[in-house]
Length: 312
Image (cartoon, rainbow, N blue to C red; front, side, top):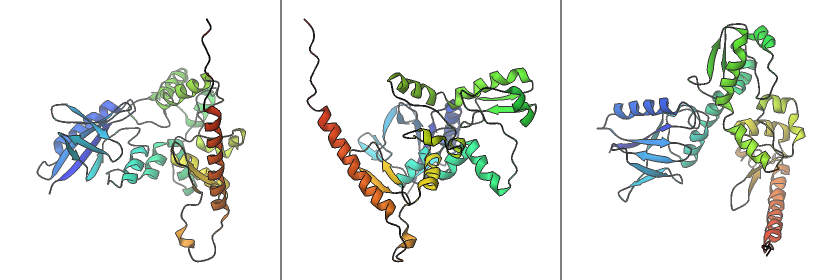
């Protein structure tokens, strides 16, 4: 029996056109006597199956299926041909892991780590693995061209921290070209995050960022904030467990139910050994109770709100 293969292509970055070409090459190359190949376009505004006549059929994100002519199609494997986010940064890997659908790229953690150049190099460094000298800049930092050149030399490459190698990359030969190259890179790395933050700030909310995970937690800057939103799983969870292991609580937001859990995971290896520490479990239970009470209070306060009458 032939396998149904979903070839995901497109994505959210500037490399989406390259991804579509890559995906179509796979589609044309897969042996039709062995596989039923399906082109799946993944974009921010739509996930669709595109047939040979370019007719689009929406993907059901609940189970990654598609209905064509009243027949539901599911997939045996996913070929990941997305360049950049969400195919190379761990998001699609995590999604298919939850659905238990095999996919051709690496796992969520590896994808998330290697997509972020700064985080990846910080992990490699303690093992003595040689890497090129780097100079990191966050959006909003003062640009010191002399300091950059002193550390990395010329010519050098300027590229976005979380992007591919097709867009947002410039080879710089002269000091006076550094500023423009940096501006080009920031368009790739922060074009989504920055406008979102600015939009929230316009609503009167005190939101700041983005910050690099290593320097943010390493400098204890996190202590200046009431809450922290991490764009990637391991950007937030790894330092969280390091700083609060045994007393932290995992909370899943955006659900109509309340879901909390201890920060240490299942810890099956401790079962039956009388070694487990119950503190994190207790904190998870207490946090769930507090969240329930807060939600109930909010619901009570916002019910039957008096409407502002129009002045006559």
